Image (cartoon, rainbow, N blue to C red; front, side):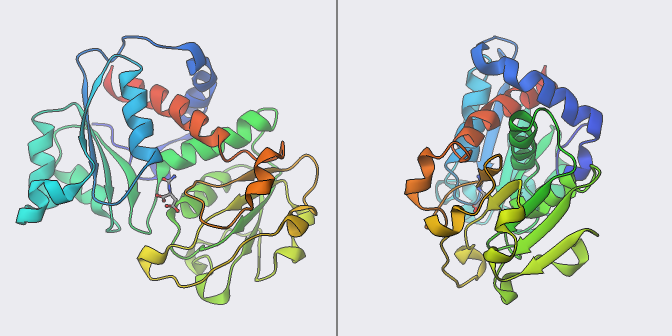
Length: 285
Ligand code: NCD
């Protein structure tokens, strides 16, 4: 059975196939997932990811069992993750799982009778975010995803989207990474790609950036910092660069920048819907 637990579960052909079909989803309201049911099982807050899966499913004729607030599920009575997975496997064809513990999706996959899609496991990974992040670069960069100067900013220690995206981009040749964060929120040493540079000052690298990937401080994982990029810092970005953020944004990017053609963070949500439509079809039809 196919699960999607990590970026390691997606090879280049799989990813390329999804990206090639993703932009065709603009006008696609098909019925390919008619009579299929997805469980959205979220043990952590989510606006975009859970709604994106919901919308992707319904747009293709399928249905969703939304368990978005575990306070109202049997988890609050003490039911284990495994028992909940067995339960939902009897009622649905696939389970999208978000959980605060690293490795929770592996635990779920070991027992599940239906495919598991990891929608974020603590500070671990978030492979479907990476699918849409990679597509954002691919789509806005003439279908190229190599030889890029990628600057990652924010809570690089606890943010899972950065870890998954670095894994993906490291596979393509010539990509160079700049990691900008306070010293205690640095990208984990063991995951550092070969071609990388670390700094606490965005000024050191912003003018040498093709992709600026901004993330928020993960206060729920114990991080305690505040930072915000200013319009004057953002003015040093090259004209043909793009600015991404997995969202939610707190204060990291000024609203004033939203109208800038380089701002792609709201577009990312549309791309996410397209990519998840193709992914769900791939998993369930
Ligand atoms: C991210 C996540 O949950 O890891 N959000 C998302 O899925 N778009 C980023 C975050 O919460 O900071």
